[in-house]
Amino acid sequence: MPSVPLRPAKIAVARNGVGAYIFQCRKMVFHYCERSGSSRGMIEYLKNGLVQFARKNPQIEIFVKPRPSKHPVIRGIYLNGNDKVICVRNLDTTQIAEKVRQIRDSSGKKADKRFKKPVLSTTESVRGIWSPFHTKQHVI
Amino acid sequence: MPLHVSHSTYVKKPKFKVPTSPDPPARDSISAGMHALGARLNLKFSDRNILLQALTDKTYANTDLPSNEGFQVLGNNAFGLYVTEYLHVKYPRLPLPIFEEILTMYCGHRTLSTFGREVGVDKQVRWQKVTDEALENLESKKPRNIGKVTADAVGAIVGALYSDQGPTAAKNFIHDQFLSRDVNVGAIFEKHIVNPKRDLSYLLRRYSQEPPISRLMAETGRFSKSPVFIVGVYSGEKKIGEGFGSSLKMAEFRAAREALKTHYLKEIKDFELPSVVDNDNVVYRPTEIEDTPAVV
Figure 1 (cartoon, rainbow over the protein chains, first blue to last red):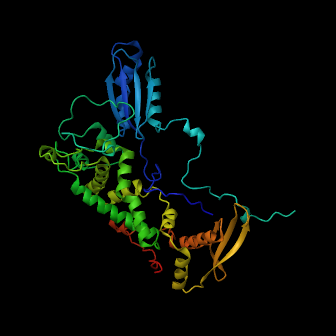
Figure 2: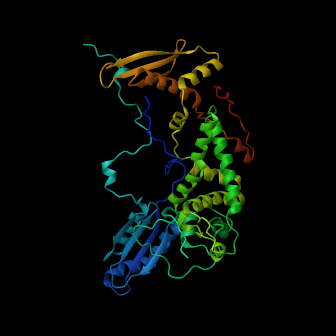
Figure 3: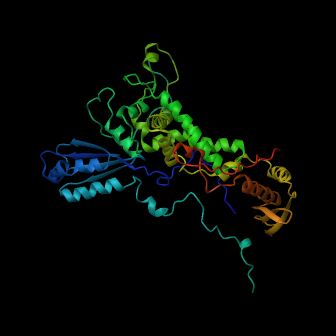
């Protein structure tokens, strides 16, 4: 027996990936300091690794801005309005590349909700919800 | 002179400050954000300025390019064609008011503007709340709102695809981004049903089938606070619908409604769309054209 929603949605609801996949990370901001030691790895990455990453990911807008006397930071901005900020102080190039990959692959959703609601679906259960009227009668 | 504008017409402020380039962009230059948008939606145009034009609203003054109005008209008609043919072939028995509502849900204004917001079009579109002429003449025109601007820009992107890359490119875009979205067809149908028993009676009469008879199939708790009745509606020996309810009338109503849904929401799984003839060397095999709904 189908369950009836109280109020149907007024628009068609998106299902990312069913047709085309929309990449969720839309912008990445790189902050570094010219003089501080903690930014050494970041500067190295900006010189050698960033352009290749930007070419491989044309859907992400890359923005680099010096931020003097502060630790180097990477901020990823997502289509749902959230952001993810990772401080990359004292990390080397490979470690920073790993953090960049982590930000790129994220969806922008906050992590804690994923555990409260592990299954998200637009359809109800596949085999239907149990009903006593559609089972064999229990015989003692 | 401050113009009165409501909150909903403004672009929503982000929760944090998004750093942007301090230099003003050159006139009619494609920004990094626009380029990223094009890549995100897999748009490949022959000329960079086409995307720029599609994202230029008619209110925007600081440009030499034409506005996106031309593309928008073309795009809206492309939506009309491709979404209509898809729904028409997939649900051949759908009654007209429900068909129109589902069509609006897939490619109406609200959906286009929601889609634009989901992919970042609303941040890249070039527009003004009030045109320069209106400001100079101190006209109190209703200011343009971001929702409509975004919806128009999305229509314009499809129109630009149709014009620059051909109908197939526009069709694939519409199928990937819009027809992959989820619509609860059953819920829309239920919204339009007022008298299912009468509608079912007329429907069976049209097909010269036996008139519907409701039979109680199972029940529990009849005199308690929470009874459950299960009623099946039969046409002769065949059960055509089943419904549950806390009263006999409610269960009968639902059973008739389920029978109507089973008939009118018939979904074809394996079909070819008429627009497939746009590609060369393809023979179009039409699906069966179904009967009209029973007139009450």
